[in-house]
Image (cartoon, rainbow over all chains, first blue to last red; front, side):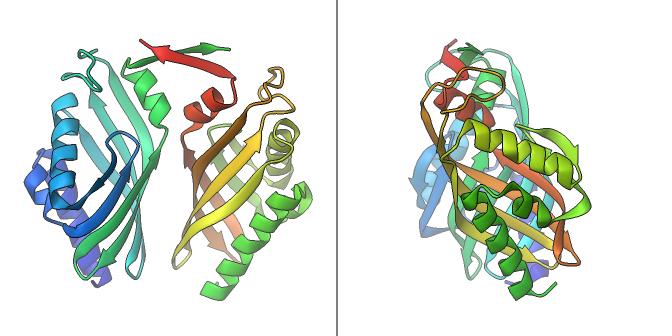
Length: 140
Length: 140
C-alpha cells in the first residue's frame, strides 16, 4: 500500500472503531492474521478479531481511539494513539465499575497487500485494569 | 539521517544499555533532548537522561534489552524492545525484592543530526511494578 492508502485506511479504521463497527474492523485482517492484545489475548483472523472487538465494545460502550501519529515503514506501521473508555459493561467476568480509563498506546502492524497479517498492542494494561476498577494496587 | 545511520544509532544505544554504560547511553541524545518516561517522568538533557537510566541500572543491575522491531519513517522512529532484569537494588526507594521482570517497551522517537531529540516511552509500567514487587495488585 502507498503511504496515502495506509493513512486513509487508518482514518477509516478509527472511524469504524469509534462507531463500534466490529465487522468493518475485522474485514481488514487476513485469514492467518495474528493479533497480540493484552486485553483480548492472542487471537487470529477476521473472526477472532471481530469477537475480540465485540467483547471490548461491550465492556466499554463509549470506547474511543485517537491516533496521534502513524510511523509508516513500507509494510510495517506503528500507530501511536490514545485510548479511552468507561467500564459500563463489565470485563473479565466482573460487573461494570463505571470507571473511566485513558492511556497512551502503540500498535504495531505488518501488512500483506491491503490486509493486516500481524498486530501487536502495547500499553499500560495493568494500569488500565486499575483505572477501570478490575484490579486494586497498593505499595508492597 | 539515512536509514543506516538510524539503525546504527539505535544499535549504539542498545549496546550502551546492555553494557550499563550510562555516559554512552546519554550520548545518543541531543544536548536538549526531552524524554517522557513513566518511570523517570519528563526529563531533559543528557545529564538528566544519564541520572534516570543510572537509577534504573542501580535497581536492576542485570537489566538487558533486546530489539524486537525498528520502524523508521524519515526522522520518526519507533523501536520495540524487550527489557528484562531483576530488582536486586531497589526501585523508587523500595527495598530490593529480588524478583525478575520482563516486558515489551516502545520508544517513540524523533531523530535529527545523528541524535535522538525527543523520546516517549510506552509500556506496561504498572505491570512492571507488580512484577518486581513494588506494587501489589489484587482483584477489586
